[in-house]
Image (cartoon, rainbow, N blue to C red; front, side, top):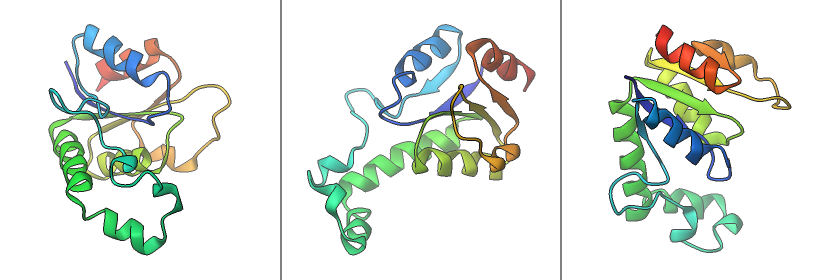
Length: 143
């Protein structure tokens, strides 16, 4: 059984089904959309509905708010707990930073891609690149 940090995007429709699938396979999986019982995952809109219009100064200040700090703490604790990161594409910058942290720490890092995704050279720092559930399970067994 692996302790998996599934890094992806809120917009990735495959994220929730993959969380459930991996749990059904016996793995412990951190779900950033539900980081703790009764806790919804972090969203910038909790701080300000107009977050997409922020200046760089507003963005920097928002990182220091209690809401952002709590979201960061949930995710960082889960990253430290996990022995494996699955980077589920497509996703954004945060998920890529998370995967880079795992790779830099020497923790198993798996990229799950699909047809049509833009190639990324730095994926070579990851242990495995897979494109389906069978490949993901094989990578998890391999170590």
